[in-house]
Image (tube, rainbow, N blue to C red):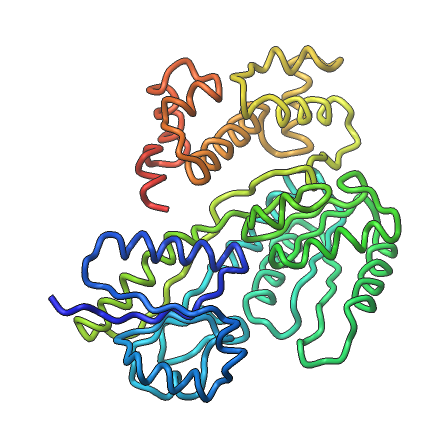
Length: 383
């Protein structure tokens, strides 16, 4: 079988791109027909674009997977099968690696509404299609619930605005907004600067400002003080499908098509560890559930015992303020924890069931399938 020469022009400095590379690597391991070529982005900077184009001509790749910032006119104008991970626009005539940005914004809005917030904001990149799409769906979903959203847009990269000036502008913007404020950012890169801007004006996170980002780049989210909650995407699976599609284009002359990723769930960290409600009984119950449900099989009577309300009264309050039941919240926390462990660890289902206090691995698997429609193993293997 002919060896396919594949050029990967993907950076590894973001969690999203690293996940794409991990998925591509998983596909390559199923094949004995790929030869991978990949150079450091710094090498291109040192040698320049002209050398880079010449080098590609020497490699003579059968296919290329590239981020937008690695594209040259020679690559775009060549007849080499190409899969692009775009930043500023969608490339017609090529296969694009995209995300269902409407679903991302909708998930962020629903997450904050379920926590009882009334004040909302979004921070994203001006003129970047996926950032603007996430903002739009976030706003549309909240408008349906009767809320407005304030926005802050990072200026386009070609504008001469300093980092310190932008940070000060964000700080002023945050100061003028009503609190407690639920803020969604278009991706993890922005959230670090939001945290630092909040510190400039002494805003407490999450008490006054709750922050949710996208991509779940663990290096960024857990480096922050406090750690940032973020929406997990199925980026690794998208990387796998991108490699699969490229091979089909090369070998079967398949037409270019787009690969669309999706949001999976919110990975909750300290930046959103708050319930924006005035009812102290519901707040106490939510805090108890969020603290213990991920590692313990808690019961409603235990939750009732931490506040003054009866079970009947507390159930009514959940429906009144949150529009769902106490049990729904327990299930939400537990299923999110299971999904996180399945995607981010190598723990077996049996080990996860022990860690989360299920009575057996069979019960853990049954719970997962009832909630997600697939078994834990099927979920892990499909991502």
